[in-house]
Length: 316
Ligand SMILES: Cc1cc2nc3c(=O)[nH]c(=O)nc-3n(C[C@H](O)[C@H](O)[C@H](O)COP(=O)(O)O)c2cc1C
Image (cartoon, rainbow, N blue to C red; front, side, top):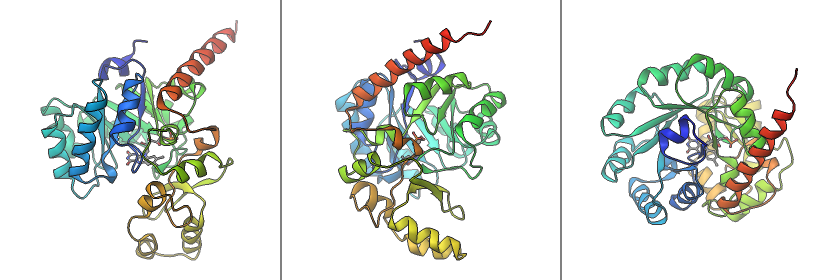
């Protein structure tokens, strides 16, 4: 399969595993790259030292291309970028911030840069900043989300019209049928979070993974619009937040309720009532915790079947 994303990153399938706090360490990234996609290490929940360890671990498990996701709001961003430079990481996906700040210096160091956006306005800004590819992430996605709340179905064709760059669709894609839909809408590849968060190689806690698998449709919701809209499971912590929002709590009050380390508590330590359980709508499409290799194989098999079915549905 030759396309712009495969050529840009030197991979077999245009499938990226999104950077995910507490899920995507070196083990998950290496497994995705070994399976033919592009694995990303999520620096968002790592100290610079831990990021370094995960980059080295990933390299010990695969010689295929992999990358690092860097949320640009990260407090220790200079130290994180130093590690990326010293460890000679050649692919970086930036998110949650202004792409102008780091793109030029990364590119001067020979890094291929993609930036995550939630609207065509931000996609144009990323293109102006000189990135090599754009990830457009819709409302269905797990974790922090755009303020616009545009669904992937509407976002991808809009961004496709706005920019020329290689485009990666994200948000709600967990099957090969979803991949085929994203390509039909104008994407060159997909970024998948939720499905890979629930694989064997993900570093999330088993209780978190199992709770996500059991979730019926409608059990995740976007909340915290005053701070940073976030999609999470409707557990006890979520109920505290929604009660506070409904009585008009300020951003500061919400921050106080959240406190420190909530996503670590939920995703990494498996505290299902007090933790922040970030996951996407697509978890209701996933039935088992499987090895990454199986997940990628089934994505490709389903993609092939879906595109064949579509070709039988030609109208005269
Ligand atoms: C548990 C979790 C943590 C995430 N953490 C990050 C992060 O640190 N940085 C980032 O850019 N995106 C993050 N995301 C978003 C993913 O990288 C990806 O774009 C998104 O999950 C795609 O949508 P999907 O969940 O429907 O597959 C996270 C998603 C999940 C589910």
